[in-house]
Every structure is written in structure tokens, then in C-alpha cells.
Length: 181
Length: 172
Image (cartoon, rainbow over all chains, first blue to last red):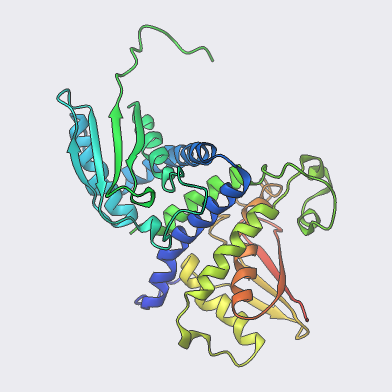
């Protein structure tokens, strides 16, 4: 297998588009299969979770990030390293509470919606990019961090920005119970 | 940007989830049943959902190709384009061989298909392999459709990670 000496611009574009178009076709298929927006959202989250649990290994292998010491550091890495690596964007990070476990990622650009002008008719509660929430949640869980990840605002639903909220939950006390297998 | 990785992960997840989706696994002219060994028919493996998602993506990709790439003189040129340029753009490698009977049937062979690479080589996952090919068959059919060619695309695996895509042109 030999790599071409340089990529013609057209190839790079097709490669970039493949994921975004596949994602769009997936969402369209799920909209056919499920009538309720909540069901589609949930399904996207579930699929994202599955992807996230495996993507994290790929991420750690590529990025060689060191050990993190705070939720704030972790969120910064998600925004500045992971998002940059996989989607080519760098959301800005804000911390939403004084106990420093609630954060927001503000997405200025979102490649996933490049070909989406507006949500389909009758789908006003659809979280088009909900896969991303599942991915983040699944990835964090693989490094033993429980978190709630949801879309707080979404430009596609009429909000002024697209905002993903990450709330780190208290770690389960390992000693208190053992999972029955 | 590690897009290829994202697509592979998404594809794997879709294979895991979408093939089980069809609530109506009745018989009929579902061509995907041809590919599966008899023992697995009971599993109601309906791959047409995956194939149709791939079809939509193939159509959309076809529409985005720059015009100068599309000046084809004949059908064989289109197939060569798929084997070289499109495959290279999507899978970072070219198709390994293209054969035709010059009567509308083409066999495209990939000896090391990237979507089959993560699985153990050989025969261990032969039964699972069709699930990992359905999307790509649809993709080829969709791209051909945008380029003005109606076709039926199926795939077969003798031993992973090699596979063959069979394209049969439908004459209107």
C-alpha cells in the first residue's frame, strides 16, 4: 500500500465529507425508524457512548496526554486536543459553578452540521449532534469518570450558540459495594 | 484531522446497531440473503438498512465530486474511477483489481479491505463479514447512480480481509 506523494485537494474533501455525510444519513434513518425526537436523541447518545468507549483508546494513543489533576484540565483537553484532533475545531470552555464540576463547551463552528440547513419538519426537539454527547460520556467512563453530557443550547434549534454541558458526577465509592457479575 | 478513524468507528457502531433494526424479516427478493450461509438465515440478518444508508452517502459523495473529474467517455472509465480515485479518497488505497465481462458485469477486488482489517484474518469471522460490506455496497451503488448508472452491487468474502464487490449494470 503506497501513499500518494501529496493529496489532491478533492481527495481530502471527500474524506472529510464521508463522516459528516454518513452521520447525516444515519440521523435520517433513525428519524424514519423512531417517531419521537427523544427516542432518536437517546439512540444517538447510546451509539455515541459505544463509540466513545473505543475512541478514547485511539485518542490516548495519538495524543500522549499526561495525567490530569482536575475536571477543569480534563475539559480543556477534550476541547483543545480531542475536538481539534477529530473534528478540527476548538470549542471554548467555561466553568459554570463554584464547585468546578460543571462546564460548558461552546461550539462556534460545527462540522457535523455543515450540510444541514435546518432540522426536518416536525423534529424541533431533535438533538442532531447528540452522538457527540454520548462519545464524551463513553470516553470519560473508560477513564473512570462519570459525567452527564447534554446539549444545553443548539443553533439548529434556534438558540444563539451551540453549547454542550458536561457535569462531572461524584466518583462511586469502590469500597462501598462490589458489582455482582 | 483523524476523520478516517471517526468514520470507521461510526461504521462499526452502525453495523452493530442497524442490521438488527428491520422489524419485518420476511422472505422476499432481499438480495442480501444470497450472501449468507444457510445456517445464518435464521438470524434474520437484514442488511438492506445498512445498504440504503450507504446508498444515500454514495449519492451525496457523487454530487460533491468536482466537475472535471466526471468527464467519462464510457462505462469502464466510471468503474476505473471508482476503483482508483474514489477508493483512494475514501479508504486511502486503490482497489486491487477490476475485471469485467464487457457485458455489464464488473468484479472489483480488494485484498485488504480497510473495514475488514480490524477483524482476524482468515475464516473466523466469515459469517459476520457481510454486515461489514453492506454499507460500502450501497456507497458504490449510490455513487454510480449519481454518475448516471443504475446497478446492483453485492459483495462476497472468501477469506478476510479480502473481498470482492460485484457490480451488475441494469439496462433500462
